[in-house]
Length: 112
Length: 113
Image 1: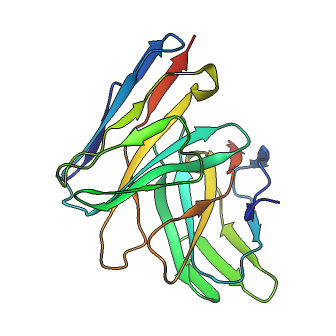
Image 2: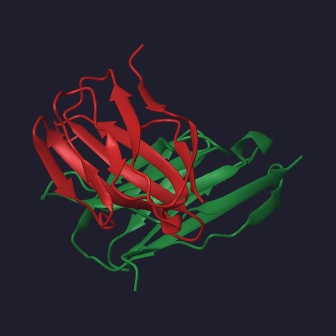
């Protein structure tokens, strides 16, 4: 069993839709939770991060962490064709260095 | 502007050859990482370094080595390339002070024939 599970998709939605991307994890000690966005043939870029549980909002993006269920989500409101990319969840421990475990990534297509 | 670069961007090599992929960052970050990205597996950690002369094995380190002689560079060497090492390789760096953001390079697409 992988430490971080993420549905690879692809997920195809019409422009303006609300998108929900999710990951589950097995290690209850993870404390930092991140979402990276990766455009085709580019390196990943950090989109959002949260520490421990709760919600965090940044513009059209909202990240949620539910530690009791070991489940994290990224919501994209009013999705745009420019949001078409692969979204990778990532997480790491509070201690023990800076190693980060990544999910496999979900490919998202937003159709105009 | 600070950046992280990788070279070459594309490489085709033959089985059994030694290959070195370069990674150079101007962020002055102590932490540097090498990942490989394959369909269905996401990013998997190969090796990482928390500073000069420090190197550590990651999840998929067999057949790879790194050395850290200065802050800016972490070259990745494939000792004897195998077809299973055909992949896209990403280098990343991050600051030491607990920052969560890893800055990624543009990637090197390696094909081993």
